[in-house]
Picture (cartoon, rainbow, N blue to C red):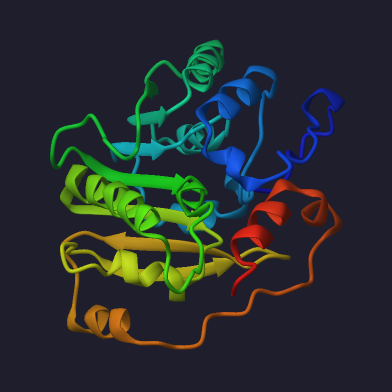
Length: 259
């Protein structure tokens, strides 16, 4: 969620809405994407490219959830991964992304208007599903992070069940998040899923989490982790100036305020 690193004044945007509740409003996103050309949540691709490369092959079919106006798909494309499908709930975001990619000659990339809670794809059709901070929106107004509201649980599980369904039997789900493992594992390790769960941290200020979920690779160790109750990781407070000004600071402190 760091602010766009491009120095052009036209791409400098003010911090987001006064409350995170607005992130749940589709009209907010349509209005925002109408004016905003580019914004990267949770760092741009260059910050975690070294974590992605070992897991995505050039011939992989990739689904990106909640593409917004991120350049993640462009980064993947420039690394030789061209079978990419991007979805977003905002028709404005989809239209602008389509135009941008066509202008750059990325004709193979598909951009569709779709809801990640009801994925319009057949079973077992993607090698990789990737999301960057899209899942975070589902936790807005979730209440106590130790015991989220039932509505939050329902939405998160709908998303994960859809991702698990569209992944091929040996597919991979990559989630780039600031959600701490202690709070993500109960969802990721729900009994209906067959994937293993691991994560890597990255970032210079906030510690972001790069989750890797491998379908069909669940083990007894994953079962034990899902039942453990370790103390949650404490995020670092050493932040760069741009992170203090960025939208992820507001978003994260609101979500984590009860940690």
